[in-house]
Image (cartoon, rainbow, N blue to C red):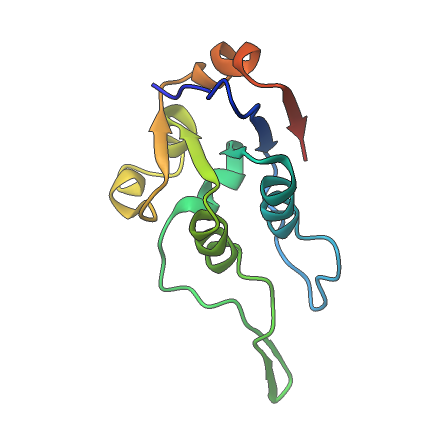
Length: 135
């Protein structure tokens, strides 16, 4: 069970809708924002729900778009960004029902460091956070 340190008030950031990427991401990708919130707040946990839980799955897919004879391979890669998020010390959580909805092998493909919690477990933990944000 996750506990909140009394010395550091933690924030919970929840992402429920998967951003499918674009040719130029600019400021649309919220994962780097989560890392910055973690750095500035002293502690942020990230919960991936719904289709955003797919960010937590390891895959061989490389984001690229073929336009005519050109291949554009500079698209947003949420899995790479999530690895950076984990490396920055952000706790990444996925509720078990959202993981199950992604297929029976999804749990076997979780990125290292992602924690699975019971269904409804996030709502039960909300009172322990200073702030809960939905991005």
